[in-house]
Image (cartoon, rainbow, N blue to C red):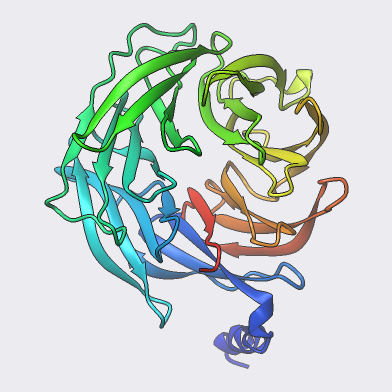
Length: 369
């Protein structure tokens, strides 16, 4: 039998699954944006196919109302954010872009109203803010502000030589923009303004020295948020204060056992489960997902398990819309693996399904609209 025939039969079998059981996952990987289909009945993944070419891309996000996908990119002489429309035939059509001057954007976020898009720039330690048109699409005429935050100082880690903004996210009421500063061990709280375009520093949330705050995930009811420390393998719980949109740092704990604290280990992504009951953190080097339950009253994380990803260097992961499945991108193993999520305990079970995609750095499920 010719070598290609078994793959043909595998694809044919996958194609016969009922459409209601399949959901697309978008993956930012080497060479562009890829798509794989998750079989929600058993966790099977289709072979990823490249849908759009993007140079040196790192993050994907969507518009809150429109069928628009945003991708950060970097190329020789320019970097910024590209906007794509989801077409009915499954393709992506480029609709515009926002160019920025401060280097490679590591993270991007759209405000709840869909009128602003922000990006964090690790190399320059800056944040960019741009307006979006009413249809969610930017173009070259959109004014972009590259805001050089007066972040100064450095943390105790040898790599904390300057400000390193790594993640951005808007508050639910759109009044505030949160920025993790991996270089200064803090979260900056900014006030964005659309007309005229501006950013103002409102507050600074101090985090444990040497932790290297990377990303934030907010609880479903907004009372608590969680920050993963890239350098010290930690999760720090934040609690909302009486002041609107503000948080204070509470306790921190490790995502690993004490014997696993090695320099090669660091955290990547952090996400609260859609149910609000569980918290997940990626451990690079240890190559696992740390699972925590969240106390319904206090929001405190309690460790449950550390599940191996069956790959190397878990850069990102995401939940399918049902909350029953997780796809993990193993950046150094060029792999995507799927896991079933126990809805009672939060524990992960490997589906035994794995596919290959080059250097995955972002996994994104898009809610149906």
